Length: 297
Image (cartoon, rainbow, N blue to C red; front, side, top):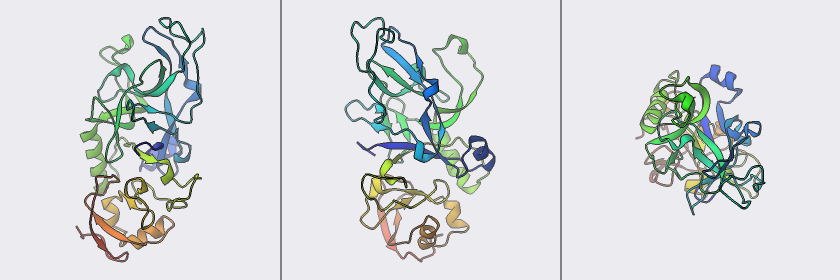
């Protein structure tokens, strides 16, 4: 997704949690909560902050990883300038507010919340990893998940301990988060914090400014994989990756069957070096759309 807009997408397989979050398909994104926007101009150049809530993937807040400073910004957000009421006291002139994804308290630890912050400078540096996960530039061992907000060192009231606040965009140790996700492929009942990955907007099945082979297809992360044209192009159609191993080991026989489930047909099948969607994944060999996939590698 380098230089391209994306939304954060995660998958929650537990039916009870799906119902609680209002996510009938299990796949979800995050959006900015306009009602939660809070102005607090301070000496550090900050103007306002905002939090995220769960939304359908088609309604996710569009993000962009800016190469000039590694900020993750929100390209659809209208420009906003400070006023006398919102300008930080240390700054004499009004300025265009830079709004981006920010690590709360600038504390790089599991359980820290990620928020949108508006300020005079940089919101924070991020990395979009090869598997689509998102990490702070200075803490590559952490990734964004949907889980409990448990720590905030800059809050005096939270010093030493704070009651967990569920359902937040937070950081988690990547080995723990991805390890749990992998274990859930073998045991779908296992409870894990859903891991967010960047999905290019052009891979979504909503309207597009230009046609895409992925238009009209409906893969589901954690069940039928994800569209992956941002990494592998569309020479042979819409590439689908990250199909859970337990599907191939249980009820999925071939790629043709998989493509039928998401509303398409198989044009070409290939065994890859890894099942995730990323530009670091390479093709190992081609096989038939109707071949039995389980046990192939």
